[in-house]
Length: 375
Length: 161
Image 1 (spheres, chains in turn cyan, green):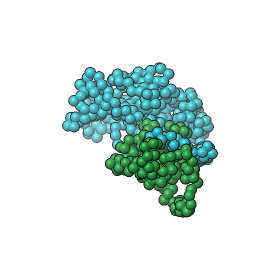
Image 2 (image 1 turned 120 degrees about the vertical axis):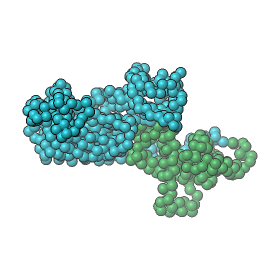
Image 3 (image 1 turned 45 degrees about the horizontal axis):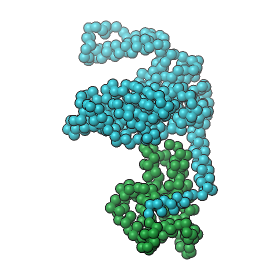
Image 4 (image 1 turned 120 degrees about the horizontal axis):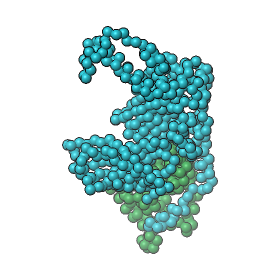
């Protein structure tokens, strides 16, 4: 029966003419989508011009859709193919929201199953020059509206033009789950510009001391702090008097948006054992993208020796299709229940630069897992 | 995987699933376009090629249901039932033995026979794709084979199958 079925059904194929129509329609729809993506940028550009904001090198990239060169520079992407790939998954925001003493211009969001990058500019009021070596927001709450453990870090990108009022930032959200489609609550306040890290450190230390003094003056007790070490009678000087070389722009900038980027990750269902003489676990899934690799591992606690050190300083080895390898120490998120005896280990490795080659296999605890397409 | 790769890999499967539903190349081509254009709006994020294929088969069957449900389609069906369709005539040539008979079977049997004998899916996998219980799939597979046997006649069934 099977052979006859296959033989007859093999002849049932669509006509070449209908396939040509299909490809043509797909192309038309993709063109329409591209045009729709472009329109918000035009609106934002017009808005910026109306506001007479000097805006030169950071936003108006024309190659590869709408992505700014900041992203490519940040990830050191050189290949046109990779640039196109990145552009295909990115959410182009192009949203300007104003606050006191400046505005935030949200540019792009990209991400995968493990990590999300938000690129944005701070635009100071006209006439202000942002020429410090680096900038940091004193208050920062950039969070995905989802549950789970997370960490975030932000920093200013290298500034091509030290004579303008624009400085670019990236915020990296490490949630170990995809933020695709989630609401991002974005709030930053009080921008400081520094000439070097020593200055930044001294400023933070000074602010900390001033906070202690305020609390001690209010009669609070602080663990580990002796009130007698502080001159609480002395008048608090102004910040700019103590640090005349630090640039400060005070204000709060708050908004929210939906992270409708397309995750670059490809999810592989593995369900294979990870075994060493000391442990036995199961690698459930592996997510792979040019940004990061994520391993979802499950185990029974009684099959693991030295449970507390599970995943600590473990080496992950990534083998590429060109035969080269990358070995790095990784951390992992460990959780387990002594009641159910079950546990999970989530390993994330974020590539320092976006990958421009293909992954062949991933090795963890000495067990190699070859990606499905190369088996 | 981008849409071009998905179309290249699965366009024949989508076409055959739709063809098996309507036994009409024009409808099958329409469904093929509908499925892939819909994919542009809701991109796939599936782990393996097999999962992707199973998802697309489900999507194709849903698109077929929708087309059949539409008032326009009901009218066309009515008109087609007035006379023999040209596709049945195509099957009168000797190249095809099973397909003309398959066409006469109720769709529920055609679906399971196609997925099992052409796409090599197990009873359990067909159950997942068609969202039916595996026991029901087993029964439908058995009855589908019995009906084919009856239509072919015992002797021819043995000869061809």
